[in-house]
Length: 325
Image (cartoon, rainbow, N blue to C red; front, side, top):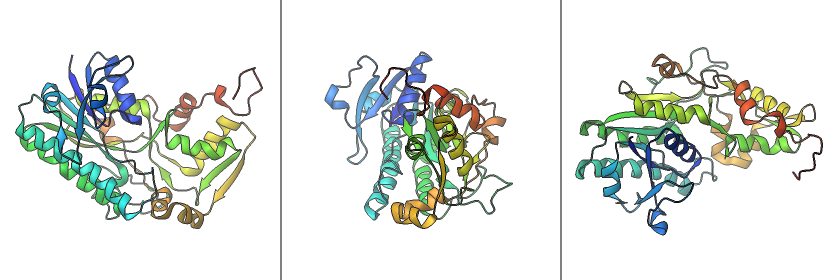
């Protein structure tokens, strides 16, 4: 049994990953800014918790000293708020400061950590040069110069020094995560619940997505495979365009009872500000490196992924069965 320390363990990915790791028989310690409130004690349905706060440099070094592996997920949500200058700084600082604190603690405190698996994002990549893009972005591509590209570059650079400390480093550049419990899929569902299939912009932009179960399995695979080093794209092998994803979701939730509606780019720019650049950006990302290294996807294509996440029984136009909606 390995002890795995997870930052960001209470978020969408962290919660699912904690459940999977625990199911596999490993011990999980979650680093949290709020761990002191429960004295770090595990409770039914909750893993052990230890305190850290990257903004102040506080960390429970004893908890880190117990870890065989670190999974670093923590960071302010990119899509949670409009991108003001203050918010952009919080997005970047929350990632860089966390990485620096992990590196500093590993350097200064006795530990037995064998590997660090750090999250990053496909925001590393720029827009597709053509749509469709016949040459998906691979891990060797340079970072984009826009905000998210620069944020990912600084994020990855901040965690890179762990290699000089003799730790194996794997970076998972996560795509658009599809989950029943929140994230992007929840946002896609909102207009569909009202009978509107909201296609963003032209709808031709590629969405490089991944099912939450496959993403968690990818992190676990990276922990267990000593041959894995460096960046890997955390995306499914077959991206889809925004229109295809939106209509497929609408058919599952509403059957034939929905209206496709294109949302003009200028409205998205008014509503979302600078964040609209990412919503409208087409980025086709390759999963070849992970597949070539032996990872097998449960949900390589969008249809079975949506079958799992939005089964027929979830349709909002279903016949009344006696249960409240």
